[in-house]
Image (cartoon, rainbow, N blue to C red; front, side):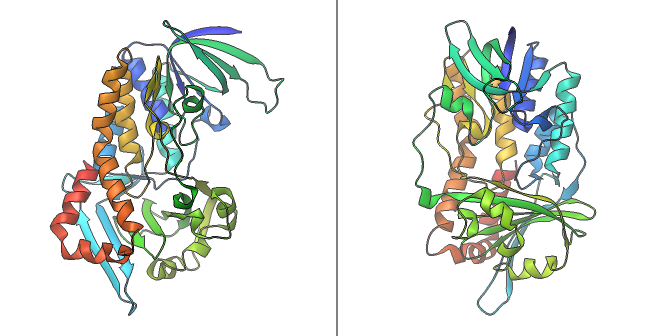
Length: 376
């Protein structure tokens, strides 16, 4: 079978669906494909912090969607000193609130919007791609696991690789960057607890080697994500092993948080992601564009993934016919994220990691400036 489309979006998460919305608004035919079957039902989930900072919430609304969730008034950095006293630095967002939104709710809203604009969304896997001056031939396989699945070749004028950290498009297009050292790799876990939020702030709890992010996402539900090396436990090799072990064993270093969640019901599955840090040699190759995490990723430490990804999606569609312009737009859209996240990550990996919360508390103007820069 063969087909033709203006834009083939690989990856049906929020960034891919946002790209589809922008492309449809530009009058282009769009096909979104994702290897995960839940893409068809609008129910994809992912290990993420689930906080939309004010800038990300504005970008989501600009796409014509307004997903339900819980108000986020600001960010709180927290730790416990040697005497067991809680230290914290809090900053309310100056531009108004953000929103804690279940990843499934965000996906459902964007999926409905993309479909309402006549985007095609299919469950399929990219097996190969070849391009020439006029387009890209992409070989798709059906949802089955074996080589005998029905295959289809789609001819696209442009391909947008929005398929995440482990991007197939990045690899097939020859854009894979040099890997980071495995010893420096970080992983993430996320689950939910059935408990009423005790604050409207996103809490970032700091321990010796990992961080815990608490995001209220409903009147009786909070999301908890833990980031750290090798899932935070040397006995586990990666996100899947760590996910099977669960988040609860990793909350012990966060005394204040562990006490709050003691006995609370765990809701749903524990999801894992990583290694988080990824490089791409470039964001473009001919008529292929990398967007979102597929284009390169530093870390989830500053919680900016959705905002930055949505900005890239808009830029990629605006500059479909000009690869150099998209590269420049990508640099502008990601500069603050890359600089601030890289700097904070280096500080967090240094011997003075324990000074992060005291420094934020002692210099509230600096802490506020960093939060506002990320939140805009």
